[in-house]
Structure formats: C-alpha cells, structure tokens
Image (cartoon, rainbow, N blue to C red):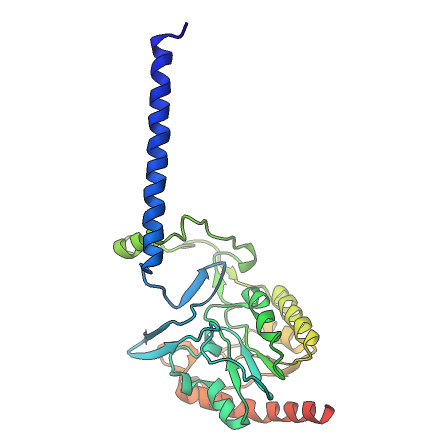
Length: 299
C-alpha cells in the first residue's frame, strides 16, 4: 500500500515535467519567431565566430573605421565581389581583412585596382579575421571553380597573438548561438563584461609550423584543379621572419611587397589606406602578368 507521501510525489514530478515542456515550447516558438523576422538583424558574419565563420550573403551596410565609413556589400556567394566570370581567365584572392579591404571602398581595394591593370577579373574572397586555420576549410570551394591563378594572402592574422591557438578552438553551443541569447546580448550590451583572455599568456593564433602545413594543404588543393599559386607575404609594418621563411620554403611563387608606414592608416597599422592599396596593386601587377603569360604559353 502506497503512503500519502508516495501519492504526492507523482503529481509534483508530473507538474515539473509539464512545466519544463511548456517552457521549452515557448522558447522554441520565440526562437522561431525571431528567426522568421530576422531579429536581431544579421551582421556581416555568419557561422560561429571564434571557430569558423564566413560572410553573410546579401549583407549591405556602412561600417565605421576611425573617423570615416566605408560601404560593404556582400554578394550571394558570400564574398565582397560579384564572383568569377562564366568563361575566360580570372584570378582569385584569398586572405583576411587585408584582402577584403577593411577601411576602403570596394573600388579602392587592391584587388579591384589589380583587375584594371590585368584586364581580367580578380575575385576578392577575403574574409576578415581568417587565418590559414579557417582558410583550409574556406579555400577548396573557390579553388574548385578553377581560377587560373590564386593569391594566398593569409599570415597577418596567423601571427596575431591570442589567449589560445585556433587549432584548439571548439564549436560554440547551440544555446550560445541562439537568436534569443544574441538579442539579450544586444539589449544588455558589453558594459561590465570582462575581456576574454585578460591576464593569460598569449600565443600565436597559428604557429609558423602549422601555418606552413595549412598553406601546403591549400597548395595541394590548388594543384588538383591546375591553379597556379602565388604566396603573398602581405605588407605589414614588420612581417614576422618565421612566417616569411615558411612562405619562401613553399613551392609556389613567393612575393613580398615592401610598403612604407605612410601606406597604412595612422590609427590602424594593420590595414592599408587608399594609397597603400594602389601601391600594392602596382607591385603585384608585373609578376602576375608574367605568371599568366607563362601559363598561357604552356597551354
């Protein structure tokens, strides 16, 4: 015979279960509604920031950089460009924000200026924040489109210091990526939050050794599609020797343009200003013309 205590436990457990189901259903309905109405509005990036991300197709907005704004429009391919031509030769540019053209208009970017010099499309597929750790995942889709030549411009963010290397990054939980939580973050804001990794020993996001291995992986994919490779040591105030040596040791064509401090924004020593983009394109033009002519003759 059951005691009165036993008889009371079942209804309580049932109510707890029913309440949990009701809360879950309400949260699911709210999440679905936010998704349908695109709340909060999608930003420049899609995916899992800090693990693997790309650019949001169809994104269009002005972005602040210092005391000025620059327009960013992302095509349905998820790049700051219309994409490759249906036929004829073309060049692909892969890299981070320095390829993307952070701080300048699309037509001021070195890829667009180089396109005018070459007379063939130069497709800008740079993704801000990417290192070779993300690049080895991102590159194959575009290399499969079979450009005649690819410029690999990673390295700036690979040598960037962070609390942990990109190789140890793990996917964020579904909960942390939910629109409900994203909306709450926007409402609450960043006030009072701690800087992640503050006080920790910093390491390179990608070590020189891993950088070389990742680059070789991209080289192998390029070779499968018969794509000529240019390894670009993207201009920096001080390009780390260890990364430059790894690039020089690869079997691609190595170029290391040298630009003065005046080619960078005064408040941002990482990204090129308008004149810097023009000078970079001018330096890249002759060697790329030569490589494309060699390729044409070989065919």
